[in-house]
Length: 379
Image (cartoon, rainbow, N blue to C red; front, side, top):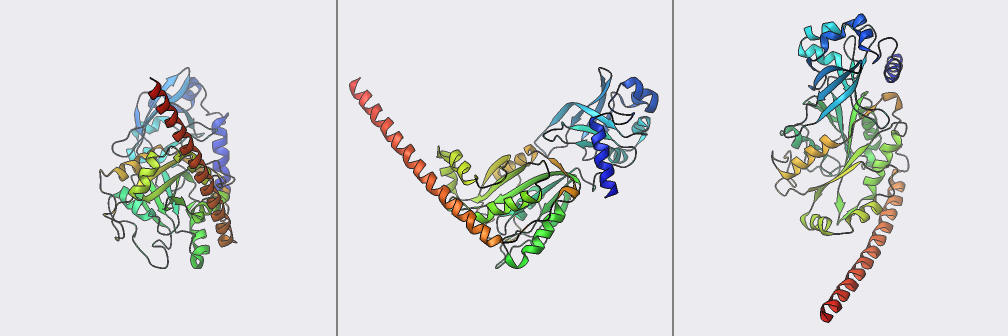
């Protein structure tokens, strides 16, 4: 707890005075820690991102080229630089790339705080040997493990059909390209719900930048109440954290996907279905059902498949947020079945509203067509 408190105070100081070694003037930095030794030089930060420091208006700034998945690129320019008190910057150019990654970290943007570069005196204080955590959440059978294996392009997490329970009974972790991927068990299993809740809580306590992904499926084009309640349950555990999350609707059949693409109501319908959520997703994607791997064990999207490309871009664009373990609450899974029933009623009401809205739109469309026909007859 003392270590967490120290980190919190350290990062708070970074936004303000940061003792005597804040983002202050370069002249002051030079006298204390040899700032000129890192100007116009390229370094490697934690996660393999390339960082170049420079001087602007008497302040230390940095440009960052992110180590993004193949086929994608992302850069940050003009980031503020925070230096831990007592750091000897002149040593950085003499360190190996591995040692540089221990000292130089990228703190990704949050709603009230822009992205920044942090230089630590010794090895960085953020948890784990990875740049960020990609956390997959969702109920049994939605395809979380398959999506992860599709990213890795190999079978790392067990995936496939498991009768009576989910394939993932406890969280699975894999470090890939300096990102820690975590596949968590679902809450829609009464016998293992408490254990699953504890596994998810533990997965949220890595003291790191998180990209949170919920995975759900559709039943005849309709959202499931259990998926919506699962999202609410996790969001309640993070109510003291400023975070965003993404939502993937997986394994959508072709007819449903065509309706989603063609329907002018799709956005409004989705808004109505997601209304019961206590926190709305920052991004939503639909992935088509891959018949090649449907019902098969330990298969995944091939490299170059549309589904995989959509997934990679979705993860690359999804905002990351710092989650400190002392702000994570225990998941409350009491009255879980009862709350699912309440959510199902909300979904049914939303479906009726969408059906009425569809009738209204179709009626208006028919009326417009009639007016067009009348106009054409008079011309």
